[in-house]
Length: 456
Image 1 (tube, helix red, strand yellow):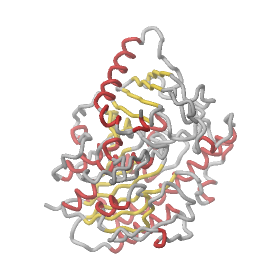
Image 2 (cartoon, rainbow, N blue to C red; image 1 turned 180 degrees about the vertical axis):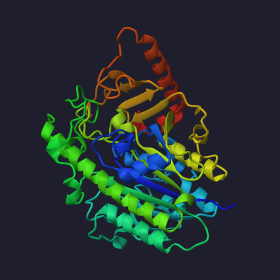
Image 3 (cartoon, helix red, strand yellow; image 1 turned 90 degrees about the horizontal axis):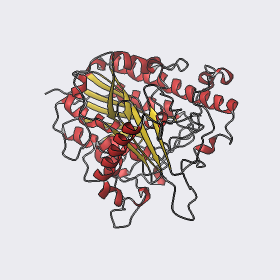
Image 4 (cartoon, one colour; image 1 turned 45 degrees about the vertical axis):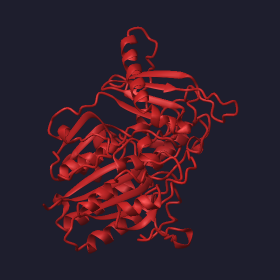
């Protein structure tokens, strides 16, 4: 059987709705819009949560293993010492790259991995411009050549004076223009855009004059301490929030998105020139979203839609064109879906859901989405309503105190999550149903959560 190629384009911090084709009237994303137009967009897609303020790390591990974050990662150093911030993808989990290598793919990694070196090398047989960190100056990315013996120590790092998006795109174009093997390829390109520092070339900043940027409807001062109200991401803007400053952040965010959108276009053009575009499953997604002023927040360490809901767009053989679905999906569902589209047997270590029934017009057998953030926040939603539970920290010396708080939102009538319905008359049954669903998820993963001290 001849398999199609697989191309995954992953952004860092790209919110689900900061795409023109998803309804944003300001941002310019013609190439991502093309993928929406020619493929299928899963518009209610969440990541599965995080055990770390560096949300990128566990959410990427979850995608590559087809599991939730607390199944994907080892919480010890494999020598018995516990860790609460592990980068190590569980060696017993078969990664997407491993599965495709076994099926005969040439697997090639470019850009941000942000997990352990060993899991990268067992997933990919080659690569270029590998970045194992979380963030960097976009014009000084500490990157590595692929090393078959996994020698990624500091002595082997190199830094090129080129914007990260251009660095990773040039590596992708070099690969696409020179690839001549008979076997299909799996190319994973993981951008560090639009993560701060937001250093797009000036021409892209000029596209978005700060004083013309509309403030989000839910711009406000956040009304309570959600548990991480003062960490690095939140300190990117002054307290109390300043409208002009938030507009500048939005301008810079859009500039980064349009810059990497342009380079996605170059990659699609290179595929088309090779005559491979119609024989390639192309995926666009992100590790998580970002507040950028919504709810008075700046980061992704929260359970609001702007932070947990991320783009998931698939185009290619076997995927219907021009379809947007509101089925409840999560980013790790990508792994079993790709295996189903390719007709490759799925590893029994994968626990996520296959989305191909949705592509065929059927229902996905999932009634709720569940997400968590450390020991501070839990969230569950159904097709319309969403409940967020916050926890006040018990430790007397806790730097981040938090609040005992519950929010209930009607996402259909209040997509900006402004009006908290918790405790209001008429919503008792809905609240009870979501509390029951939340408890079901917590019970389901109770043993796993007990092994993660930072979550308790």
